[in-house]
Structure formats: structure tokens, C-alpha cells
Length: 258
Image 1 (tube, rainbow, N blue to C red):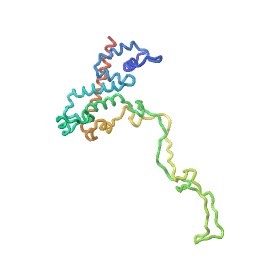
Image 2: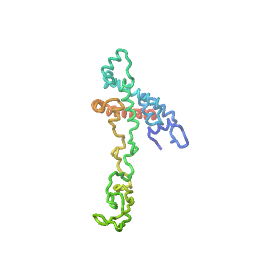
Image 3: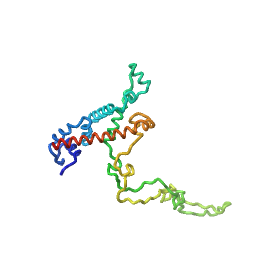
Image 4: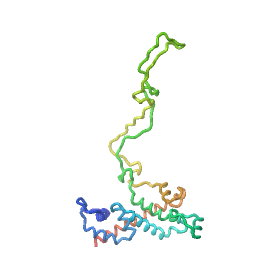
């Protein structure tokens, strides 16, 4: 049985075991992968291979940041993450906080995270989730106690004691069993709990949804600045990563055929 090229790369990189899918010599697969460019090879190893190491993530981040800088869309003076005063201090030889220096690297790291972890967390990429009973916070007044939270269990008139409103009545109360003494009970929705339905998080696409606030936080910029200068860059660069990934497997396919 033929397996997908991405699965083949993953199997070639994994530790061989009794239940590992049979493929051709793993060295042949990894050797063919070496013909791809550095960034594409790193992306394939992270995406298809076992749990990536911090060193692999760091290398891929730097390679991606280098590609971003050389693409001509980012002017170094504009996207260093420094204000005008901070750039003047830097030229004067003063130390500048490293976390604010290179916004391109932070951009590359966030891109890498979104590209690798692109599946919806709620449905794990399937687009559908199993139906569950709806959890509701709505309540209504208890019909048994009328909202008082207690019910009268006995009532006695005290003899030889009368007031202006008639005989004094002694009543004994206990907490209402239906509402537990709260006076209100939760509404009881009864949706169909069988079958599956479209994932409410990804709307059936199976893809991770865009988190504008998370992106802005990762870049260290305001949400308005992200939407003005960075939203379209994320869209374009994620598409470019898909193109790079596709070229890797085209190269891999040609090498394995040869």
C-alpha cells in the first residue's frame, strides 16, 4: 500500500518499531529530502516528523526571517520594532532591549506556529464534533415553593392567643427539595445529544481560526497597528509557506522517481 509522501517523511524520521509502516530505505527518503532548500526541508521535518526540538524551531525561524527580509517587502529601518528615539540611542551606542529589536523574527516565529499547528483545536481538524447536551445558565422560579426556597410542612393554631388579625398560627418550614432551598431551578434544555454537528469554532473547515489579538501580542504591537500593517502580511506569508512546502514535495517526488 502506497503512503503519502508526508507520511513517508514522518516514518523515515521516526524510530523504527514493530508496528511502523513499511517503506523503502529511510535513508533514501531523507536523502531525497536533502535536495530541497534549507527552509523547505526544515518545514517538512517539523510538520511531518516527530516532536520537533527547540533547535529545529529556532533554525526554521531564522531561515524564515531571512527569507522575509530578503523578499523586499520589509524595510529594515521600519520593521526593527524600535521607535525613532530608540534608533537614535542605538546609533549612539546605547544598549537597546533585545526583545524589541527584531519584530521580523517574532513575526517568523508566529507564522511558523500557525502554519505547523493549523488544525482546529476543538474538532482536531475533522470539522465536526460530537453532540453534547447544551449547558445553560438560565433559571426560572421554582413551581413548588414559588421562589421562597421553603415549604410549609406543618401548621398549628396556638390556643387562647389571639391578636388583631385573629388566632396566632405556628408554621414549620423545611427547605424545598425541588430547588434545594434556592428558590430557582435551572432551565432544562433537551437538545438532541446523538450524532455529530459542524464544529462551532472552525465552522466545519477544520482549520485553526485567526486570532488577531494573539498575533498582535506575539508581535508586540497594538491591535490597531496589527490590523493596519500586519494582517495582510500574515495572509501572504502563510500562502508563501504553502508554496514552499509544495515545492519540497515536488522535489522529493522527482528524486524518488529518479
